[in-house]
Image (tube, rainbow, N blue to C red; front, side, top):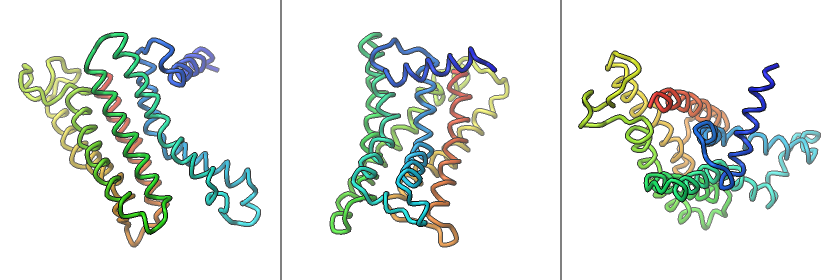
Length: 238
């Protein structure tokens, strides 16, 4: 069923994996953006392969997660969706000579640094945690501010003071302007800030007493999917 759709999806996925080698089209970078919201799902796949592939499920243990190979793949799995988007931005920068793509690439580079530093913080020895915690916190905060600004101003085309629809964009799909203001308020104040804080909670060691750490990871991952759905709507409209 839907063979053409599956083939189209696989083609776009291949273009993402081979980002610098193909001209970047709208479906390609949209799929790349979706992959950046699936990091936790990819890490779950990594854990399942480790847990069942190494036979830990027979003894109800997770000894494979202590291996150097597993920790190395934590970095790879977390960073590679952002690496593909960075390569797509560089391809467009050199092909289109558009400086905006350079700044977009910088956004993904900062995110890669933040992800890698947070991962490093989670696996280093206790005696080195303070330094990694400070580095991860600072870079994560910078990346969060940059990403939030880019979402609203560049990807969505909002907060434009010179637009005929003040603080919005010139062309609107939905005639009721309040929908956009509500979306900006909810996304920025609730989802974006909450999710950026959730990023930081990995280095602040903030946890709810009534919620297991792994449950919190699942909740944050689910909220990220919702945030990406909202982002998709306004990004495609723009």
